[in-house]
Length: 86
Image (tube, rainbow, N blue to C red; front, side, top):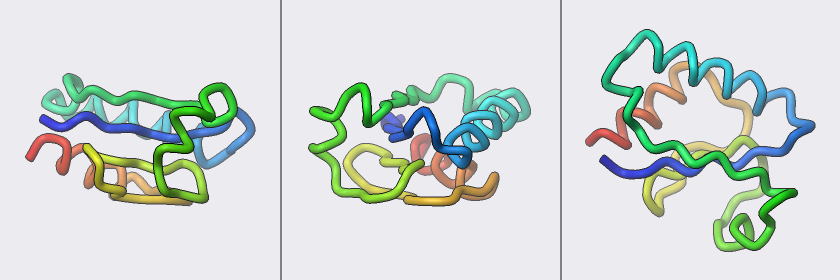
């Protein structure tokens, strides 16, 4: 299982929606509950955010690979979780 890094900001409505969907999807799919998701607020931790190549939030990396950047969907979040598992 690969770790997931999710980059967010506190003021981003898409980030809040993605976080809500993540909880919902994890409650529906038990194997997703054990995925290590590190949620990084780029405003609170710019030193971490600067190490990754992205522009928009939310952005998902699985390991070192960027999976999605920008407005998410439930399908994209499932894809992130699946890539973490496999």
